[in-house]
Length: 261
Image 1: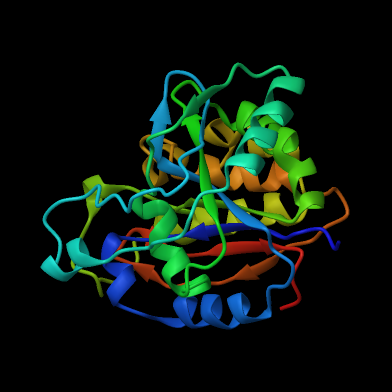
Image 2: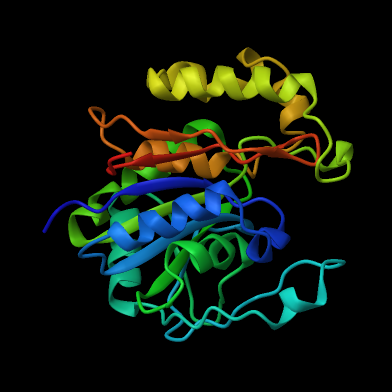
């Protein structure tokens, strides 16, 4: 079996689910090319826990974990089944790497998972499960978490880190507002560090990257990128999707390891 890919997808606002753009078009085409995927594992900033947790729900419900958006969004469902066997293997991988792990038999799919999957795998026929983000996760430990999950790719598990390359809701503006200057400076720095696989820089991005704390007042939306990077191999170069910037501050730039552009 060919090793499954690993992605970092900027999932944007929940309204991305009903407002397709160039990224959604790319995800649709990419999904049609995916072969031999047994399950999808998603790391999302919208599931944070005190102890690292793995979703073992056989039929996870669709969680509408947001408010104030278009009514139609609350009717959307993503009825993929879970994969208990691979979730349990994931727990074993994490235990072997020294992580403390909890099984969650009730957890559903948050919008960080189902919004991009509506485009990537719209038929919801491939099982999906999530791994939580510990609340004390750092850039360094997020990379280590990805390294612990990497062996699952050999078993046909597509790993997706779902977040946002920039995410400062304190500065949100109307959707089509011109991007703030700091957004591109931060995104360019991050792209350079990821493409050169400069782990030391990435682990210390809050001290080194321009406008890091403005781009991410809290960094839970960026850490899934670190997980995805950790799950990729040293000799894998990602395809970078140069996504749009919405609301003046929300970069949709995304990274895809193990695919052809």
